[in-house]
Length: 564
Ligand code: DON
Image 1 (cartoon, rainbow, N blue to C red):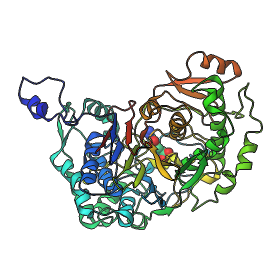
Image 2 (cartoon, rainbow, N blue to C red):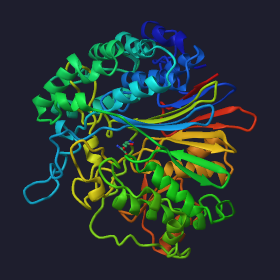
Image 3 (cartoon, protein in one colour):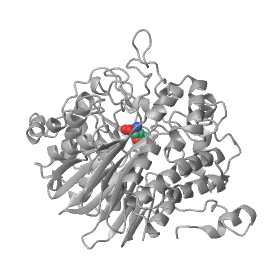
Image 4 (tube, helix red, strand yellow):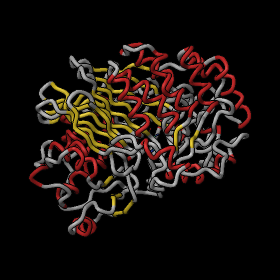
């Protein structure tokens, strides 16, 4: 049962219903469907997407409606004040990718986060108005709808407006989160967002300012966001907090259509996001480096397979730090990075019995936190069109700045640039010239929306939030299915590990690398660090008989699948 409507409203007024039922949705973690399927971050959003699909909308229509709905019911990450990526494969096998990542404002400059001594000023790129990149989400949603959508725009924006106007019931987890961030909200806003400190589980949360903004978007498309009243409120907000984004920055924002990265791995063909994400290139490099090795014989998280996979991760992330950035502003040598001989050469110094070295100098902090701020949706519609979208504000509630009067949070995506060569960002990632700040440039991402084909047919759709751990989570989920023979839900929920070159540490979930593997890796010279949780995968798989299996990650309570 998707909806627990019976006790819902009643639980607030009557005594007969069980006390704990206070919200009108439950998250379904797995499902098998014959026609269409969705895996996404919140039941209220998958409900919206399912409705669109059932009414004859295609996967892009569902994605349009879901993204706006997520901006309402998932305010910590669902967004109109952030940016994202689409990887698309239509029913005939044609593919496309859309880059609607945020861009640095025109007044941004390479050293804008450094003090007079040339040191990074802590917090400047992560909190408050200066951390904000020019949002791309609304332009991106409009662009994908114009090119591939089939249903009227207004019809797809409408469910989100309704959710914002009439409200939705918030879970205890959401209440806790809003309370946890209350001090930050207060610090960075003139009108404190979600200021009701008496908020309780099951309370109806209405967002009338957000409804107003969504209505302008419904009526005017992207002009309802980048121009007119929303733009005015946006720029006022920037001025009030010392931000850089101007009306011209907003009016000038453009998306970029790109060609997906395609990489063959055995009988599979992997499609993923090119720069300004590092995800597609790094994923392609990793599978190419792994392909010569008998991974399935080595076994899931055996010492041998884990050590090999870590060394492959180390090499891909080292290249990420050196070569990857927005290809519109910096020459990213994609062909060379994906060249088979180059990647075979990268593994020439691989030793299966000892730890590799990242020449670790200085302190790259692995600040990989328990965080689910980004969102991903995977959709396959009844015709076989597939959508893989990852979209983000970066941190929880982004910069913590909400546009006063417009009701949406702004990203803190500027932190994904390399503020200074070699200085780690909030995910511990380092970068250099390729990812230096430049006006108009997009900051490098790890988001990895991915589609996998097998024998020319759609095979998997997957992606995740999780900062730098996204790429390695997508890799491991794919390998869990194709090498270790796991059913999709097991593949998604299996414990994971991660290495990102610097810091030279294997981070892992508690249950990962068990049965003495951790100890053997330490003996080989590795440093290990346990973390609470990593990326949160949302995946679909098409079985040979055409059944669509959907899996949502147990790591996030709200992750939900739907279909029919
Ligand atoms: O684009 C990126 O790589 C990051 N801004 C993503 C942030 C993220 O996934 C945070 N959530 N867990």
